[in-house]
Length: 113
Length: 115
Image (tube, rainbow over the protein chains, first blue to last red):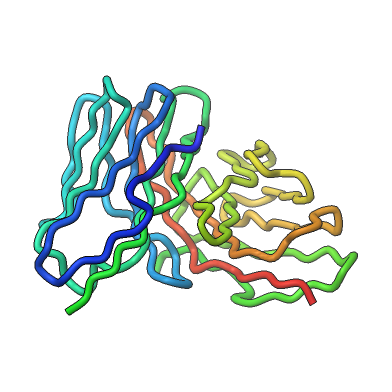
């Protein structure tokens, strides 16, 4: 089940903060966050596990609300290098799904100097 | 350096032609995945595999085929049955470690266009 990401696009000035949300209608085992620059491969940021929170980068953190089946990615004091499209990937079960993820449609983040 | 290599970077297909996209990884990862990316659509799963000689259909497998004869290789064939193949194709892999939730690592992608 494809998760829903919001907002679709964000425009920021350098140093401003942003929040990107990801929600699913299914119970989630984990949420994965990736950033993709135009024409490049998605780069892994962090995994949020059921029952825990994992911080992957210093100024980028995330939370995972299992009951609401939602995750949020927090970007603080944004830098020009944060520009790109952010995707959440959700894993619905721990069992026999071979670790497959369902990806949202992405949130395009643009940081201006 | 370890990584995932996709080739070619750009590929053009004529009507009615099959084309094969290559994906090779030297990370010793067990699981491999193929995604299709269209503007505004996110990443949609085509096929995935956890072990040699075994693979499963994803959400949009029609018009595509794969093979997994070696652990490090997972080629994708776009057949003539795929009527709208123009897209950016991404290959990914991840290690499978019992009890551990591992991220997927992506190749640089192949951009396929119709002539």
